[in-house]
Length: 114
Length: 111
Image (tube, rainbow over the protein chains, first blue to last red):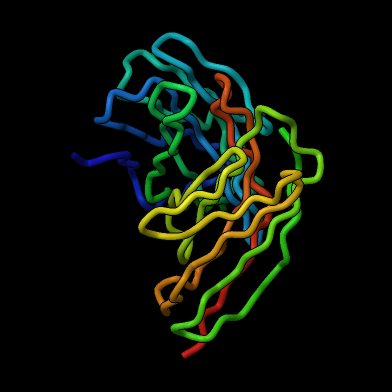
């Protein structure tokens, strides 16, 4: 049971480049989400999904796209990278049910945009 | 979701109990208190959660005041590996999966 797996762990992009951060979970969780964490700050929600085919915006969605074609995968796309998107990105999943709400986080992708 | 207030940082001697406070004075009746921690920029790790009763698991205890406006996370015998940022989060348990993180408390366990 791998949990939540993020790839890559590190990435350097040039301004204007595009890329996709991958997130996969093998726990059959319906809810998945993406956060970014800037230095000295807490995590901020970018996008989330409550199931395959359903996505919605979080607190800081601008500059990012998501899709959810399968339960397992929730990729985050940067269409045209900007230095302001330099951050650590975390993917999380939560099992269904109102009480069983422990969130499982991946180990993060550290992105630098130069 | 209700906002939370935590001290920026705390120190604790190794082997002693670490008591981390959290204020959530605007908490509503259906909102749970959750605690997560983040060790050295790794992904956050779930610790414990509760509604109004005190809770205990293998990692920690959670004490919630009777009026539910504040809570304390207790690590009974802190070790160096407990050095981390601890986040107190309040959210509804009824179909709301979003977690709102503040800046948390940086706990340093001192040898």
